[in-house]
Length: 363
Image 1: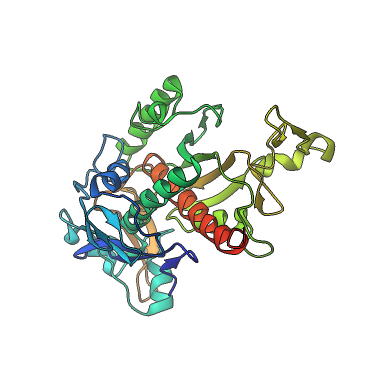
Image 2: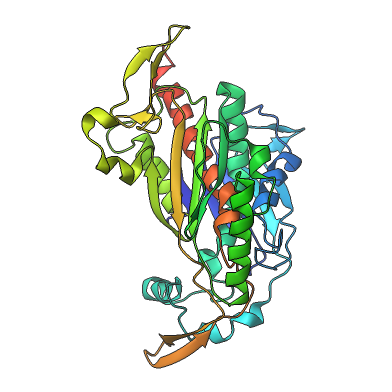
């Protein structure tokens, strides 16, 4: 219930933060795609904890194992299972949280829904659940690139009030990965790192915004009315832990413009392709991709578990206080970059297969 995403390219994630492991089952992947654990590992390494001084110190290699669905380096067309084993859990850090609810965390709502929860590391509400998404996203990225030349690049646009002005059409993966905060603007990246380090020392947390661009996206992806491309992108992005806002194209800033200012005028380029002179629509119109770059932004709140003493209640409803323990990111945003990329890839790959099945079968 609620653990499966997608229609034709469908993923189901499994596992808890402090259980034996986490992972994903991918159903609907086309056969004969060359894929390896090493390719998947590249994105998992960008997501893993303990990768820098501004992330959680939990030490996990997040080494992936392809358990099924791949033979002699190629996909079989059968379900692909990818497993990552947990190796550095410190479950005792969460003993106090078995009875006390962390403010703005999922503890109280999980109890309200299920009447039981795995309080060690947050169970399914932990960001470790996203390992499965990122692993599946790596496969989706390869399909998109191989079939259509699609390139997906995410990066940190803002940390708290430090915001970089970037051109999504020009940002490169090399520039994103050139620093630990994953902001392509080197000067602002240093300011962001300093801000996160200061917040970490204070035992607090901050949030920010990840921007993500998909280039060379084919026209025609997306299905009106309820499966509009931006609607599925929004669902995918807002299903990520700590996400609180979604924008595509001009987003909320577009409300400040008039129609004449906001409209993307059409023209025909030298190759005879229909294009738009601007891209305030963010690569979709009427819920369907128009061939321009798809640009989205996802807002992430400050990490809920902090080391400051906070007022809360316990399971009996009695007032109490709680100081968060365990190992947590002072800011989730740098590690969220590959997560946002993964959700973009999963949505686009699913819609690519759906477009092929519906509109290309009789060509």
